[in-house]
Image (cartoon, rainbow, N blue to C red; front, side, top):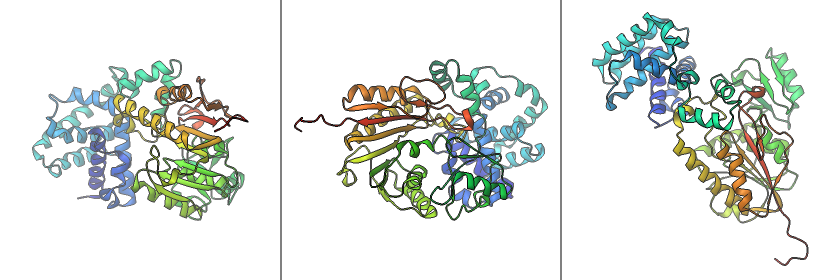
Length: 439
């Protein structure tokens, strides 16, 4: 199998897993089949897969016009194959004849040699009237390349901003850095980038947004822990939790450990527990801590249930809650296929369980910072509204930044604004017992 064909096969596997909701681009493109690719092949596979899912709904409309009849359920991999072929022909600069030939040649690899003629005909018919197919968009799903249910939610929540959110989700996100302040200031790291002929811009929060993405091994002193890759709005978490020396701190739902490490970079003299319920993801936390020269306790446990880790209350808790990820679609374009309205409802329930239990582990006078990378109100300010109504000893504290759009509670950032991702923050403080009141 040629290198390009191998890359296209891995891209197909990633796209099909996403379409069938049996996996994600990230899981497949970091799996065993992807590890067998060269760096160039993996780059090609990532480009094909991400381009396909980013333009999925537009391509779906085109494919429906080109196919005489849909494939049977057992042959849906051919649907995914054609979507990857159309994506390359429509939105990349690859040689058209090579794309058609390589896509057709994958049919025997899929155990469906009989489909060779169908795949060839569909792709060639597309090329005959490519401009017309690309110009026609029959509904909002094709126009915005998002599912109808999500377009409807955003339209209702942000009637003046929903189109900007959808358009931002369809762009590629910049590469943003977080200098390790235990080693170097943001200003000095920006100078080091300049000396390495890498252009970047400093944000008000101390992040550095690169003009062009770079390989991490091209970043000055990356291996030595001088810098990490993290979106600028994600960097508010550690800054706004504002840990003080000697405090007992919990980073709940901590993997892959970006915010864990940032907490320690800003204040290394804390007693920090990084908690996550997914054992396989703990390795990423350990790897990040080791590269940055930081230490903390890493625990595998469910943050919504009591355990040895929770016996002593915490001064501060960071709850980077599981969410729909609707604020980071531009970084993870497969989210638009992977999420369903039912999953959002389930996620809201999980968030509520986490909030309610973790609040019992905050000491009086302590703080819980609630964070999501979502733009859906039910996961954000409505979740906090529910919590405050049910929790008499919880008070909402003001945050230094009101976000990009007014919301009733907390701070809501929208994707694309300031070249950053969509995030929500709410700071909750537990009331002190009244003096003289017996406990």
